[in-house]
Image 1 (cartoon, rainbow, N blue to C red):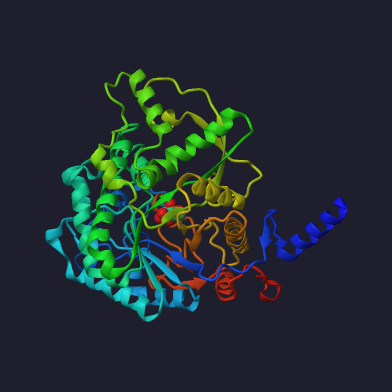
Image 2: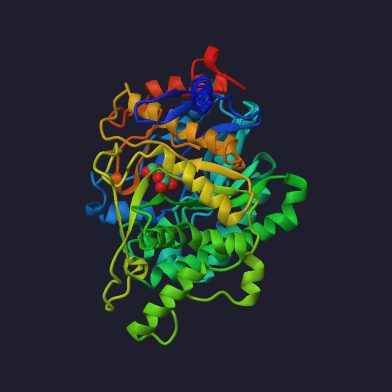
Length: 502
Ligand code: BGC
């Protein structure tokens, strides 16, 4: 009887799936009926035209120009993919792939060169109007990020950027202007992309623009300000624009999955700490109203031992909690890789730092396939586990994967590794939907074309189309992954169409 059951189970398994190279059992099931697919990119990484038609300087323009040693190939985003001039070509690629959604970002300094509301640049406004119209004419939904790391440099010079609360209200002015000008053609808004990177790398360890080093303090001040900026912008949309424009607004939060390295409580706790100091730092305020308790307790404990009178993690007032709680219409997730998490000794008390506040050990298995960089471990099942963790923590909220994709350093057109990556990660998404009842509605890949990869310059590639950065015309050249992605969009299924099942 047991053997019979086993045979039936095995047969069912074969019927519903097929095996892939790295042990992912690729599902044969069709995507849910209204499941949407898209691609993403961001203004500072593709537009170029850094000072064209009145655009102001951003902190990344400035950082790359003044601190070239921080960028691996000493490049700048001055020209990048020249999408400012080639946007029609890019939209045509999206259209030809049959995609439902295109995620782009608006450069704050193209619309407001000084960062302030009194400096509206009509040519910048026209550019985004034309781009959005192009999407509309081609029947592609627009997902628009307001802040993809590119603060106008004057706001850094004058106010110290995200460390100053004044910038919160300047962002809100900018957001409101964008809702007003562009909102009729935008179905999805993202207020802030990856606040953790904005704050930890920008104002904590200083690896990213604007390069401020203020470990264990700057990150947290910045965190509070970006959350308030997001929440205030959300409220304005909700109160003044939602009824006439009908879009959805959220913040996009990035995290790896952290797999406990054993069943020992210490390792399970290490995984939870990493998730809470990462995703929870933003997810908890927005979904539940406050920082995670675990984070509050640990930063308060260490701050006290370090001699600080109050915790380095600023508190939210009751009024702020009321403002921020519930400021989401979906959960936006950027996810690329997985690490193992192990318990570690409490870091010695001394100089404060974000890492010491967490005090865990994260590592990557040597046998795991890697992207461009050792941290980039390709572990498709990590995404499924993460989706289940998100559902457990934040409830049955609509989840949108706003970025997922593979970087390499070869840039090869025969990118079978990227085909495998998309197939295996999306397969895990479908398992999360069908087996774990996760409310995942949309999958957006990063990226359609190669881009300027921040401190990685033009040395790592994530595009389904290669961009030849040595050619002044910046031609887009198709990779194998573009064909695969086009095929899955068409078939709404990951395997050969005749093998697809409902
Ligand atoms: C960022 C993108 C970046 C991508 C790949 C994400 O963290 O949002 O701007 O290009 O990772 O490195």
